[in-house]
Length: 227
Image 1: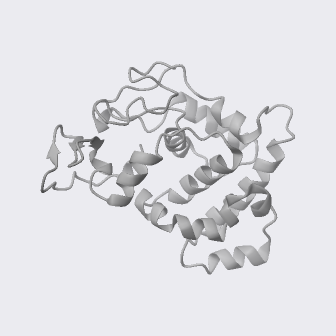
Image 2: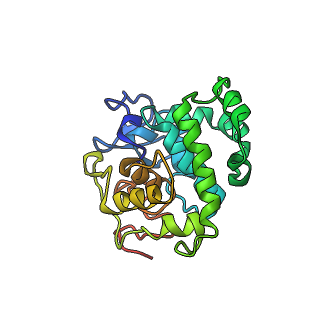
């Protein structure tokens, strides 16, 4: 799931036709069961239904997700989603080659852009991570570049959480991925942030048992075994 700070501090009150079927799963008026964090805000619900946990294998897509997860640190995921169009415009659709060429003028432009998160360290990390992404293409020890590196940390099985308390926020694989990325020059790629990335791009499936999205990625069966 998105990092814990993205979820409401307490499950918001649900009114109308929605019925809480468990403390952590809400059945909506469309009859679909979702975790509480994705059941109220329309933007989060759309993200959950159509994107979160869907496999991403392309370099640009993974670089964008890695960048946004880095910007999310300390903020709510809803904030990042609302700013996503502005992020895409500011970072030229997260094309690694383009961002790798950003210089001081671009940094100044980004720091003056009210549509994004104006954090110098995160902006510099995003530019540096683009350069590291480009460098990985010619790294003989990293077949498949960024995508090959990230997906090489897919675990043998995925969790089977029935409650939000059972959803891990870190794993041996996310810790190892963070270390591997840091060794290649990436920043803002801590183990918790990388676990959130792995959830977001389908490397692990932490949809709650009972959610309509459980096992929908094509990567994992509902019982946590690989397909």
